[in-house]
Length: 327
Image 1 (cartoon, one colour):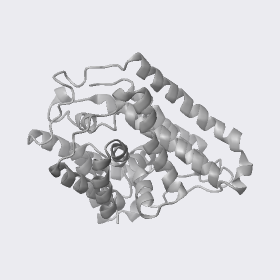
Image 2: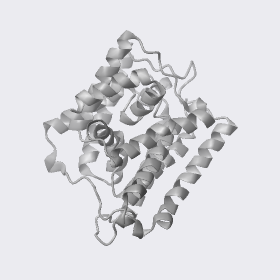
Image 3: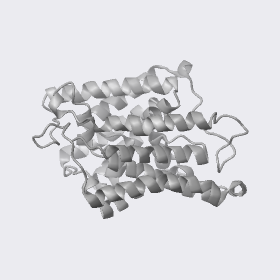
Image 4: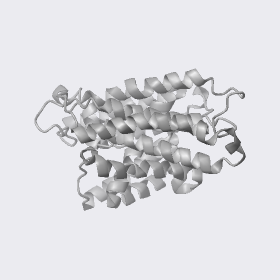
């Protein structure tokens, strides 16, 4: 069902990605952060992933209606979770990113490489989801008999929770330079760890509120080719309220690569340096494989982390597959 409050979640995605970039100089690429946490854990990786995982707690306490209904784990779904994890791991490793790193952060930076990756995995995901639907193996049935473009609205308590988080996130981010100021650069670790955790927390809340944590909603976003009545346009709001604000923020601050304008808490920017000339067959194949996994399952690395927290048995299988695929 169409959820106008997805716009509030998109603002939180923007807030988390912008906070990580502005204060630590890093791009919010969940696939690389997750791979780093599994293979080379350090404070920079684990703090963001921990914040992302911790976002499930306030949602569970204050807006449980935002938590997706995941199917119970069976013998067949154990295998599919491992395979899905492996495809996500291999695809994002070779494609050098996923929906967060390429679509949200890369497109907002107008990176040609990210624009190409996004075009590949989105097109493959779209075709995969609709072919699966036509074959009867991937039905879009989360709207329960109503057209999926029918608007639905949250309860008053849930709306209040969304509004409070959407307002608090940018306020907290704006307070960071006032609290830590520049003297923390002599001992920046505790400050950057805290800010990274908060950025992950904001981003995780954004995934829940937008509905991107719900695989059925993601697949319904792809549904307009196979069955227009099953099309849920909610996630298009992420472009308007997530990508566009991040684009404005990035280019307004700019010219972030200038040495006289470093991040708030660190000395330099850690932005991707690869160009279109670095694209090879692995990059193309990786983006396509990621799109295949995303379109078939409705899951990308961020939502996979959230599902792992809410359904640990599935998470163990999926993360084991992810480790193998990204090795």
